[in-house]
Image (cartoon, rainbow, N blue to C red; front, side):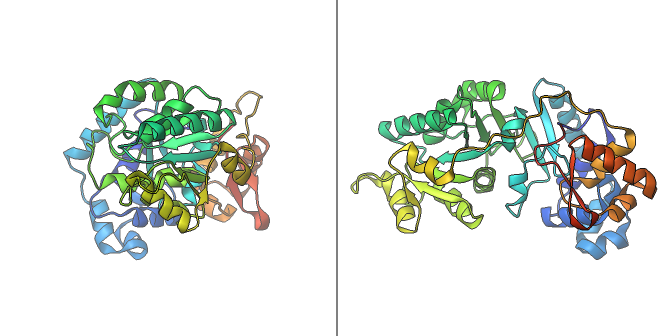
Length: 372
C-alpha cells in the first residue's frame, strides 16, 4: 500500500492543511474535492479558496506557517523513520473506505502496525472502564472467538472491556485495532504500554491526533466515531447509564451499523446502559452465534498473491490525483496536467494492475483494498 514518502513536500502540505487553526475538516475536504491534493490547494490562490470554503478559512490557510508546523514536520519525519509507523492521508488508497462512509473522516491517520486490518471485516467491542470480572472474561472470550471466526476486533485501548477485547483478539486470525485518543507516539493509560507494544507488533494502533497530543476528555468522543466507523457493528458488553460506550453505540446506529448488547442483572449498575440499548432496538446477545448469524460470515479482504504492480510515473500521478473518491477523466486531466491520450493510457495501466475500477459514464474509483 502507498504511504507518504519521507521528507516529501506532500507531507508538509498535508500537515499544513490539517494543523492550521480556523481550517475545519469540512473546509479542507471541500478544497480537496475542488482542487485535488494539498499542494494544489495551496497554489490555488485566496479568491479561489474563499469561493469554496469562505474568506476566513482561506486567509488562515495561506498565512505564513509558523515554527509549530516545522516542529510537527520534524516530529513526523522522526516518527516515520521507526519501523511500522505510517501516515495515511484521505487521498491515499490505503485509507479505510469504511471511514469515508461515516461523514466526518479525518484527513490524516497516524498508524502503527498492519494497515490491512483497517480494510478487514470488523466488529467493535466496547464497555465500561470499571468492568466486573465476569464482564472482562466475557469480552476476552467473545473477542477470541470472533477473531478466530475472521472478524477484526476494534476497540479503544481503555481500561476494562477495551483492553480485554484487545487481549482476546490479539493472537487470532482476525487481529485487533486500537483507536486511541492521544498522539500515536503516546500511550494512555500508561499501564497499557505493554499491550500497546503488542498491538503495534501484531495488530494496529491508529490516531487522528498530531504527534505529542496528550489525553484530553474531549478527544474520546471523537475517537469513538472512528471506532464505530471502522466496524460493521458495535457490541457493548457492560455499560453504566452514562457510559461513553453508549456514545459509540449511538454513532454506530447513526451510521447504519448494527448494535449489540449483553444483558445482565437488573440490580447491576453496569448493565443499565446495555438494557437501555436493548430497549431501543439493539440485538440482545447471549452467544457469539447471535452476532455471527446477524453479520453473516466475514468476507476476507481481497489479497492478491501476485507480485505488487509497478506503475509508470503517469499512472502514479493519476492515482494520486484520484485520491479516495470517484472521479471523471476530465477532472483527473485538470489535476495531473496529462494529455487525454497519456491519461487514458495511465488509467488503463491502473485498471489492468488492479489499482482502480471502471464505473459508468467513464468515471473510475480506487480499488477498495488499496494498491495491489
